[in-house]
Image (cartoon, rainbow, N blue to C red):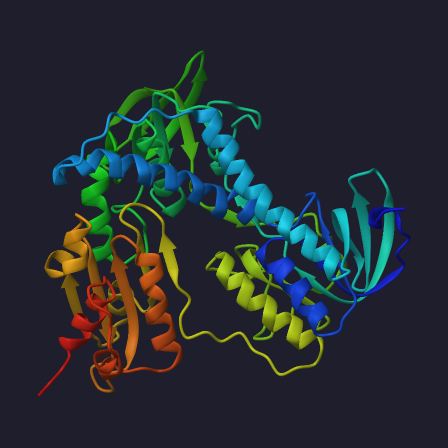
Length: 468
């Protein structure tokens, strides 16, 4: 008899959803001594991040990086023949990466003796779940405490057929069925730009349409300008202040009607259209109406500093618990919820949550951005270092990067950090640690950075605040 066939009447802790937040919470709770049941439809844990998000997208972006480096190496005297891409082999390799990671998590579930049930759950009341398992079995499960970690899903435009092969969301794009001759990306956020970059490198003529006046709304404009200059060379077009007013799927293409800010409309055809206009929390179909759990206007579950909902014995973490909808935020919230569940003093109160866009160049930031400071009328000092004077950047053949520090003008305390360039996602961790430790710019200036590295740009930026 396997685990899914065991009759389970009660569990100390049930975790609903086995994405980054869910499996991390389950692992932590077991380590803290609780008996845990983990519920998810997939064969192994991993959630959207491992199965249909973070990991497969980064695998495709690695392919894009290899292609781009081969193309650009000619400038330094290294010439390659034009790369050929075996789409099926790339897809198999990407799927292999996913299977390795999710399989490893499945083995850890067994090692920790977590009861893993494949299926979905709905609250019957605040202490009982109705389970619908993938093998057709339904049952009730009583619990002492619960952690909700059901994640999020892509927002789709209305009236689009769920099985459309030409109008797809991020999940469809990551399936990598083919590399279309032309691709329209609707949405200039990080998902659209990452996937657009991957497809452009693999041979698609990519166009991006964004209804606001800039790519990556909410991101530091200096970072965006660095990225946009490079994307303009990679993409067929970037259309800002433009919205899609009509999509018509036809044989062999999609006819798209676009409207600019003056109200003028144009019609274009694309082989495929990727809709990447954001994500929404999976808070429906959980039976929350059978509890006192409260949702806000955006359908996020309202939680306190310990991730507790209005039902104190039920916690919510990850994408369903509010923005930013990032896997590493879910990891941190999972630890807090698990510790709170066993009575430990724990609170989710980070000074900085890093954000990384894995385009080329990568851009990353943490803490306060210059744009946000301006909007909130917060007084700041900034130091900005272009990478064209950094030795390591020049040896990489990349001088288009930038590092920016934001500090409090009175206390010199670091309020934010922003980076654009190769490896920005790695560099931003220094800013996060500095902010968590309440560092001032002098701390960064006095810390010896290795030479020659891109991290020296952090040191150089800090030097700009030095007053003899």
